[in-house]
Image (cartoon, rainbow, N blue to C red; front, top):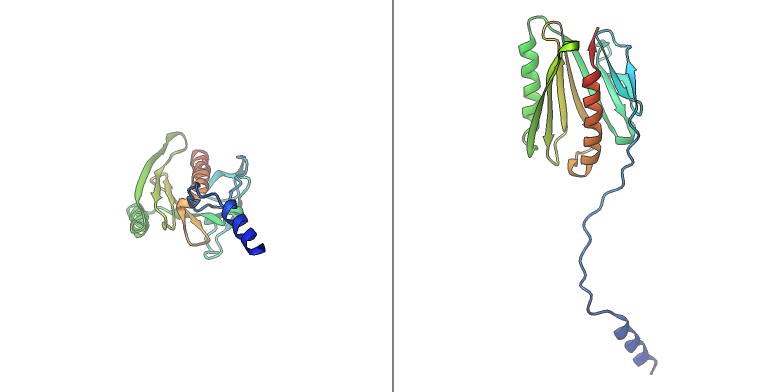
Length: 188
């Protein structure tokens, strides 16, 4: 009798009319900091404004290069690497290096967009390159030059295996910071 009662309760407690649909895979919520900037004026060759949530540190792999820095973003486990090189008739080589770096990442890219940079007031010219794709290691790269004396290359890297589909809100957020860096960039 008890067994019949349990079977009846189980049978009538199930809703047979509902259609079960699996939920899509979710990602953790990412809290983005407020936009605020500070001027970085401690480098010999150039200055720019950097997000206040980031830390500017010397490049640990090139201690002799005083104008090579990393803009560390610990909450995103990422950084923007900036390298400076003097131009001495070798601008073409530097531009070829940028193109080589982009080509290395094209295998993983679904699409590439570039934007010309021209700030005549501060004599800053260059190119910003965005690469879409789940496994692209550097979704944002850029270079800036005055065409005669200075060349700076920048690239966004994350410290984990890239999954740029889920990181897209962060990449879009950092893209605005890179745009601001470029707009405020000045040669010394």
